[in-house]
Image 1 (cartoon, rainbow, N blue to C red):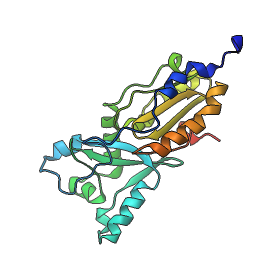
Image 2 (cartoon, rainbow, N blue to C red):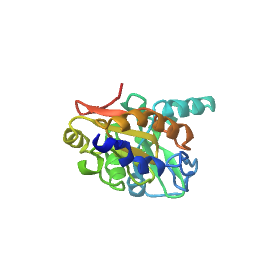
Image 3 (cartoon, rainbow, N blue to C red):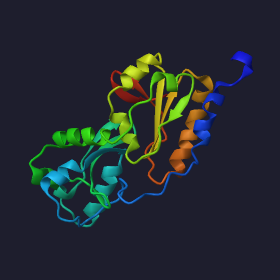
Length: 225
């Protein structure tokens, strides 16, 4: 390195800017749930749908609780895998109250899980920032400004193009719902320090998602070994 200066100094501010504790859940945060939402129209309900990225097993744990309360299979939350340790769940964002969509909601609106997930993906990405350019990531790492559902940015188009621009060295981490870190894996200092940092963020988060690092392979997310 020129002058013996660590390239990690380029991204130190990014890591220092994260306190290690995720912001407390706000009204309308993705994990909020309402058993008795106010009456809304079908159009309003469908417009409220968001496809969120959650830690794998979130839906199964929720369904276990519902089953213990005597719920039927129609009252189960449905999910789809995204990558190792990650799954996608449809959430209805009603402002002050949210809820995970269930099988019975598909029946009510005569929709398939695939159709609902496609709609919810489109709508969540519409409220999220764009991917950072290569110039912002090369040689270091960036943290995209915090906002609800930010982990769902992993569902955006454009990651493969960014990976190619970085020479196949793109690394992404989503330790919590409102934190996503985009890094250049070719930067040795970043590669060395990022795992421990992400694990700490995951442990301290109020809405933790994954302690893993992810990369692109054949158009999909896989874990970094």
